[in-house]
Image (cartoon, rainbow, N blue to C red; front, side):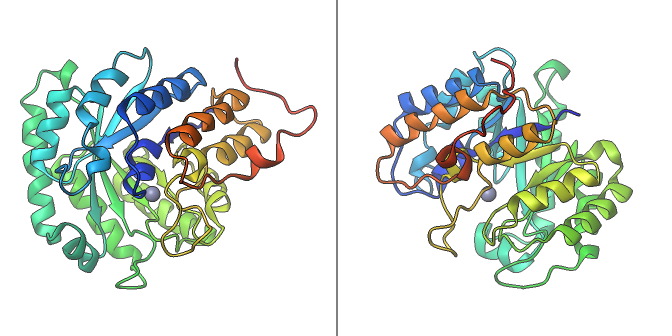
Length: 308
Ligand code: ZN
C-alpha cells in the first residue's frame, strides 16, 4: 500500500516561527525534499505579507517549485483574493481552511461559516472559469475538527454537515485537521468513517494531525486502518507547539516516514536523504528547535531503506 506524505513545513512550520527563512534556503529545502522522494509540498500561504512576513515570498517559491518534475505544489489560501494570487502563481493545489468551531473561525479570520462558504463559492467560480488543464485541485480543510481550544468538544455532526456543505459548494475534496492536538485514535476512526460515508470514498483527501499530546503517529495508524492514505507532516516538526513547550506541533515527517516504511508501506521517500535535509533548516534557522526521534536515534540496524 502506498501512502502520500504531504510536507507542510514550509507553510505550517514557517508560519509559526518568528525567524524569516531566506528564499534561497526555502528553495534548497523544497528541492532537497523532492529529491528525497517527497511528492507533495505545501510551500506557503497567500495571505497579506503584513500578517505573515515569513510567507511573503510564496509566489516566488511556487514558481520555483513548479519547475521540479513530479512535485505537487500546494498552498493555503484564506479567501478568494488569496486564491486569485495562487492561480496566478500556477499552483497545483489550493486548500482553504474552514474552522468547524465558529468561535475559532471568527477569532482567526473574522468570518462566520456562512461567510467562509461564500468565499468557497467565489473560489469555485474562479477555478471553473479556467481551462481544465490549468485548474488547481481545491480542498476544503476542516480545522479544529477534533476539538477546539475555545469551544472544547466539537460534535461530529457539525463536522459532517460542514464537509457536506463544502462539497456542495464545489470543493473537490475535504481534509480533516486536528489543529489543537485533541484527537485520539477512536475519535479518528469514528469521524473518518462518518465523513467518508457522507462525502464518498474519493472525497476525503487526508488528515492533518498534530503531536501536541504525543498521539500524532498513533492517530496516523488509526487513520490508515479506516482507509486514509494521505497525511500531512512537517520536517523536524518545525514550528513546535505553542501549547506544549518542548513538544512538536505537526507530526514529524522523519518519524512518520520511518513508521510507514518500517511497517512495509510505501512512501517513495528515502529516509537517509530526508534526514539530511534537516541540515538546511539548522543552517537557515539556527535559533529554531528541530524535533524527531528517528533522526536522533538513527535508523535501526538492517532497516530496509526506501528508493535512492
Ligand atoms: Zn499543523
